[in-house]
Length: 127
Image (cartoon, rainbow, N blue to C red):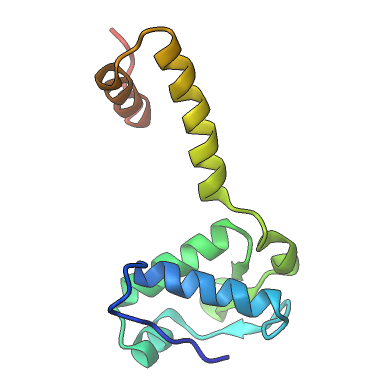
């Protein structure tokens, strides 16, 4: 599998990695239990920061495209192909849009919604 990164693209570098790995899984280039390069190795090969590759791997693990086996490495998840079609970001956007529209329907302002959102995200209670 050959990964290429376009540093001139508007697409974030970690997203390019995620998309290419998902693409390789979907077309069968990567199969369940295939190993991926270590974070350090892939970062070195692509001339990227380790944190960029680590972020891509975390997102792939969250979406169950890869599984990490501690010091033994990162491997393609057994259900990766099915999980490639799930788009968590789209789900989050859709669900938040629904809630925001509902709140606006009650008369809440954008500012009130933003403040409440920040409070919820930071586990602060209304006082």
